[in-house]
Length: 223
Image 1: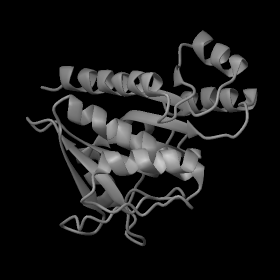
Image 2: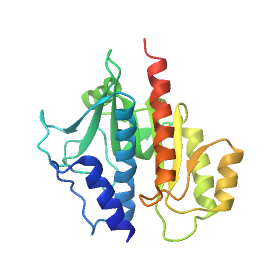
Image 3: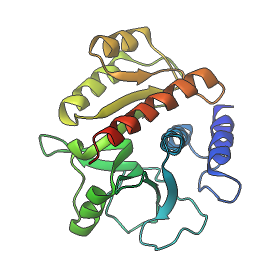
Image 4: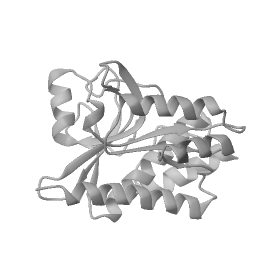
């Protein structure tokens, strides 16, 4: 079952010492977002980051992960949630979040399934109760989990989102596939990956490597 496979992969990545707030009964699309989050964290660690987890509103992590299952504000303290802090040294520090809003060029907010931004920008958002700007995101993934083939409208929607939240690296990631969607995204030179499931290790490794390349670019431009 995809849900159990995703959960097993999540638990393996997070380690036995921590307890995720998800289970096999959690909706598969929510588990998929957490799975992609773990791949991004693994990629950062592979590129030399020291990764620590943080619960919003708390000065320490109590080994209990709480993942968003609906989009929320990065600055909200109404409900607990966990994010990853990835420290590459020399003040090059990033955060990875699940299900936050970002503001596009039209000043309309958009949901980001998994997003990475500088800690300094995230702190500014938390202090001033504002959404991060789309241009502040160093990495963002649109995660689509479907039991059937993807519809072309999903690819078109992603292209529309890219006109709003552009710069740096944006990924369209799905467990499914669609020749028409793949052709559309490839034609527009988007970053995408289909058939992403733990069982497809070559594909998962390929995606993780793509995330590593994003962190490599980030480190290259740091002062």
